[in-house]
Length: 135
Image (cartoon, rainbow, N blue to C red; front, side, top):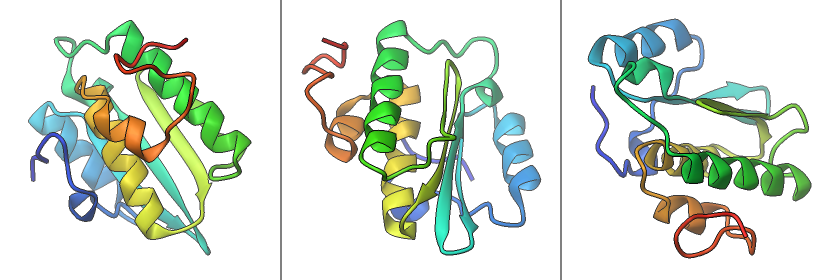
């Protein structure tokens, strides 16, 4: 199923125990992969632009905004310190709830398509201005 952009959190696929199938489907459709996975009491968020193919370019300002969001989420303990931030693949471990994981996954998905609005709402911070550039 191809996800809309921006994608509402409830449509983010739960890839728990089926990551490979969800990832392969995104790659076959040449779209950005996004999914969440349950890890015990916590959740992992994964987003990957490689599945969209070589024609999908992630703008530098988007990458800066996503990296800044990951740093904030780790600093605020909404994600584990083993988070991975780009340039085209992002992963957050230790997200406290399914709802928050879906919100963050939807925001990362939209950002990888160039829409930083959901990211600004999901992970607000002073280091991302209205245009999404770090500052």
